[in-house]
Amino acid sequence: MITSTSPVDTKSNKFEKLKQEKDGLAVKHQLDEFARIGWESVGETDLNHRLKWLGIFFRPVTPGKFMLRLRTPNGILTSKQMQVLAEIVDRYGEDGNADITTRQNLQLRGIRFEDIPDIFRRLESVNLTSIQSGMDNVRNITGSPVAGISADELIDTRELVQKVQDMITNHGAGNPEFSNLPRKFNIAIEGGRDNSVHAEINDVAFVPAYKNGALGFNVLVGGFFSAKRCEAAIPLNAWVAPNDDVVDLCRAILEVYRDSGLRANRQKARLMWLIDEWGIEKFRAKVESQLGRPLATAALADEIDWDKRDHIGVYPQQQPGMNYVGLNIPVGRLYASDMFDLARMAAVYGGGELRLTVEQNVIIPHVKDAHLDAFLQEPLLEKFSVNPNPLARSLVSCTGAQFCNFALVETKNRAIALVKELEAELDIPQSVRMHWTGCPNSCGQPQVAEIGLMGTKVRKNGKTVEGVDIYMGGKVGKDAHLGTCVTKGIACEDLKPFLENLLIENFGAKKKV
Ligand code: SRM
Ligand code: SF4
Image (cartoon, rainbow, N blue to C red; front, side, top):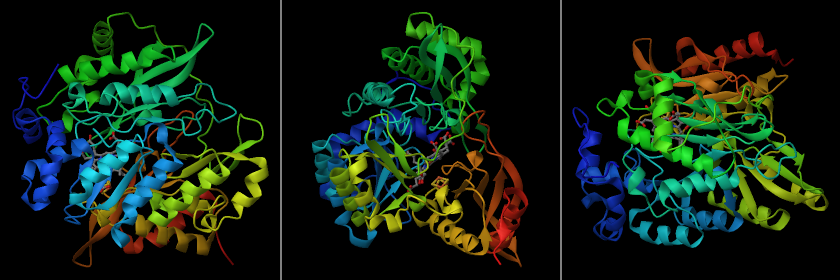
């Protein structure tokens, strides 16, 4: 096991050195002291890096107003949890909000440093944690957003996702066994036929598959996006039953990655680079030996045979007389009043539960037939529609320049404004999946979109201005594959006519008369 004292290859990499000097999780025990002395007095490495092991992100764009990234396994929250989160951000007035992320998760904004110990106590009181949600840790584990409620479900992913998180985080207490990985690590567990989690872009993904008549998972490994390279996951040639074998396999893969993953060059530290170096057969053999038992070979085919659903609208559940309702949250941005309303609506009309999606939307499950009409009259649905316009419906955006110091462009606000203008001028026959990302790190996943927009800087009339590279061809669901860059360097001020043409030529849009 690599701990903060183990010798690891630290050459030319400040992150390996800082982990070696002090484990990221160690700041957990310094929080009260940090809150007392104030963020300005916290050492640079703790402030900018180690606090991310607790999900606390110093934002150079808004110094003193921190971001807190939670863990919401399988994207599930209770009304009570949402209410507590609303109370936390409400305190910060205009600075306070929450973003639903592309990993089915929530990030709170505007957080004042001195409040963090109290916020952590409040999170703990409702069984929420932000532990190990940033830096070289396993990120929020995604699962089918309609697990346990979809009439067409194959495997209910909820308990499995929770068990994997508990193994990795030691039930939320923090786990030094997995706090020093070579780099970030993404895990997804799909339980339906539509690949709702984007299995192909995760370091490890489980997709439903029958083997000898038994339902379990085929396993994919090595998917990732980075500024340098993007790869879809490849088959491990392994099948596991939908039980603790999933947890054991995640552990074995993480141990192999932790102990043998490349560390010297951070650009080459994601799992796929190790698989490249070893070859998939050697990687599989190493995982098997770590697991201590043979892996079953993969089933011949998986069960991903649908297009991806967006879950916006009203859908009958597997439970008779019950419905789940998907609300479109424009680019995932929530304010305290929205969160209070969502918590209340889930409690009053539903079963006191909310779900988040990787498309940055919200699902409220367990709405009885008899309560649907009243639910659909709620004023919040004017803002968060159950029947949005075709571009707004599938719009996804990363954080961008408003809060992220990597950003080359403003994203969320621009994305919403542009979609409104396009919808005002065009009749668009079907939803078009547009994903914005503010820089090549690809947090907004432009490679999975029908039209992806990646922030860049462009020279125009002798000046440097905000622009985008355009990606197209991303396919999700069955036969998912990544889109590629088709046009480089469109200045944002020229984007509207460019996108209008693209929508007319490729997606059947027509100018309104
Ligand atoms: Fe990301 C770094 C936001 C999903 C690839 N990502 C960052 C940081 C932490 C940079 C920073 O410190 O400012 C961003 C925080 C900005 C902020 O204030 O919000 C950030 N990433 C996000 C979120 C919030 C985008 C969103 O608006 O939804 C997503 C949070 C997910 C979560 O809940 O944990 C988010 N990031 C992703 C994804 C998508 C995914 O996981 O499906 C990717 C591509 C997939 C992948 O990782 O393989 C992604 N983020 C990155 C990278 C490039 C990683 C690499 O291997 O090079 C970075 C940069 C890094 O880690 O050095 C990064
Ligand atoms: Fe920030 Fe770039 Fe990620 Fe957007 S893609 S959140 S700009 S790091």
